[in-house]
Length: 203
Image 1: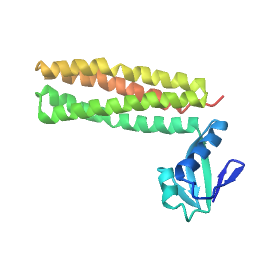
Image 2 (image 1 turned 135 degrees about the vertical axis):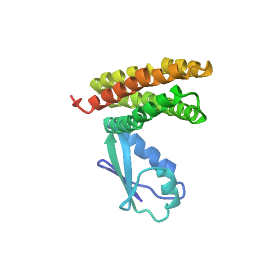
Image 3 (image 1 turned 180 degrees about the horizontal axis):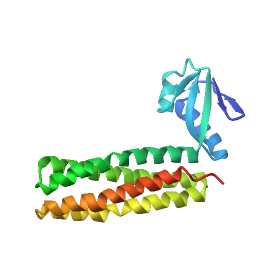
């Protein structure tokens, strides 16, 4: 089979060929140009993930693999959009949750609160990972824009601890007020900063 990465076209043959070896070759070629893997075209078929497994499964039939590269910046911006969309689901829920807590601590309210915390932890991890990707993109102006969004987002954790404390001490109305008056604006401001990233142009 032939593997094409940019202008390089390499033939792989023999029993020692594996999907892992081919992907290693691809990643080395991409790193030489500071690019990332977007997807593969395997005999014209788009393969978006589990690349090595796909190659291993079809190893005897594959004739050509073409690499479609993307910049690190493109990956970072795609991730930022996914994070932004995940956050955007929460402000309407927070209004309902806040009112729910003002009426007393319900099982549903606790479940929504726990789901919010778990989602926020996932988003925090995604933000840290995306900062590393932006560093690879070597575009400082995006690092600054991203850091503003992340700094705003990090304010949430002290608020969440206070909410949890109020709920455990049976002050649900205080928890509701914090969600609506502090957490919701923080999330909305983070979303606004992420939206501003779209307006940053490459130098």
